[in-house]
Length: 108
Length: 127
Image (cartoon, rainbow over all chains, first blue to last red; front, side):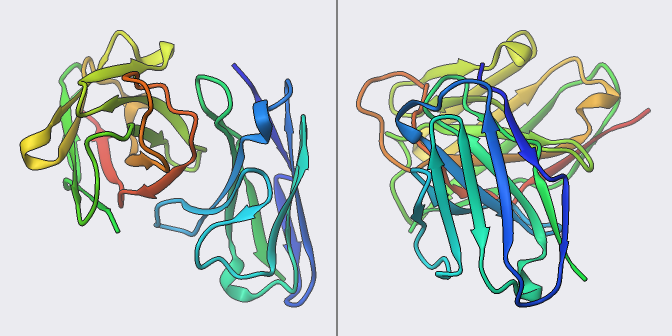
């Protein structure tokens, strides 16, 4: 199965700064079938990005995804207090579908 | 827009079983893979398996294959997760999630992202 490794484990930034989250796969993700989810405390995960770079419906433009093959990035421009959450990447190009271990984003 | 509503929290003893439900409303359900994902306290997300209700076909992640049964009742648009031989390590929030796209073949291996998700069901295993 494909192992996804996310870094850093925790990101602590000030409001308005840019957050850059990494997701690295143990082997190439088929067709760049990679998604990003946001999970706020006590809530279910929420889809942000699919297909590595397509924003889901209703997701603010400050969230963007990029990358291909084994290296993917989620960027949050102009960080807002409401962006405090854990962010997970998931590959869905190979079975079983797998998740990264998450990156926690905090506000200083 | 489909919504997934799960059953309430459970407390179970080690060695027993638990059955959690996930009811779909407001949209199409039967020809999508409905999966179960669990999250232990403070941990990440772990796929357990899924079902395509209209075909009844299932697919389980190997780690859970011996202890998990996923079933569906099309008449009530409900999918169930049953986990047997519970141990303390099974304490977790269990989520159901629907694939983003309907299946094109009758197998429960989805090559789609998960959207939407249920609200989660906390299962506590404690003596």
